[in-house]
Length: 193
Image (tube, rainbow, N blue to C red; front, side, top):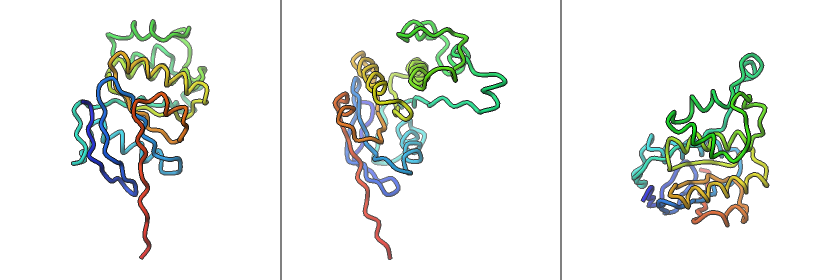
């Protein structure tokens, strides 16, 4: 068991009971809208064990696969390279495994900003998986075709024992089919007084 939730409320949302076991991929559908990034940040804090919610038991903390962002001035003056990012974000003992397991041919001195968003997310996923087998991720900024490839990679990782939560803001049935469990949050009615 990685996470067990007995159902909890967060802002105007209700999360029904669910659990996540080793080797499972959970789709947590939070609906699209302006609330997504704020809600995602709060969920990451809860599932990583940084913030305590009495109805959620964390047996093994999770690690978020960060979206890579580089400030504009840095992009021109001193862009972050693939090897520089891996030295900072990955477990140093796992870097050789990461570079060989990528399944794509990217040179270490390539600036990350020169890669597609999908390739940057793959590198971030491999770096995060070097630190933890329990991952939280989203598909923001990845086109639909590469989103499926990303989910296939996650499914392969969960088949090898990893656990993952997809914080999803699209209710696509195709994405749901790759997940072992699908949980949809409920939006509470807001009453005006």
